Length: 132
Image 1: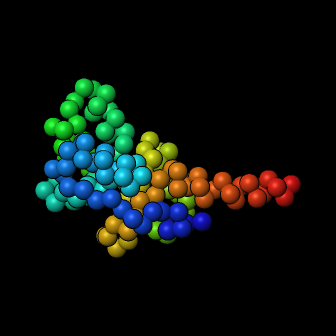
Image 2 (image 1 turned 90 degrees about the vertical axis):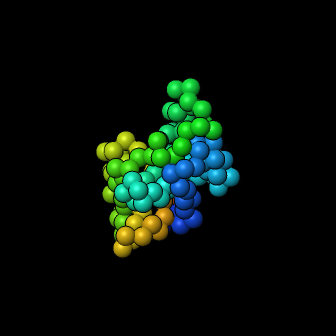
């Protein structure tokens, strides 16, 4: 199975000036764990995850005063839609993260998460177990 089969094509995109509270509200409303941050001044595409917001709040920072730009990961590992789920899982495990932005010809076309991969793998493995 490929990344294109598992990824979410509805991508939450925010700007660097969004506060962490705004980002969290948008992520909660969309039921996603990450937002793509488009910041032309910082080199283009970054990612803000629920873990980034949690770490900030855990440090006592004010989510109404903290901006996405200060918590965005800009050194992003991107996936291609043609990657296998195994390749995506390997990249996530190696990098210690749970989301990959999926690029096709330089354009953001989706986000794939560990949860997306598990959803794809679990039914296939259950079917195999039922056959034995």
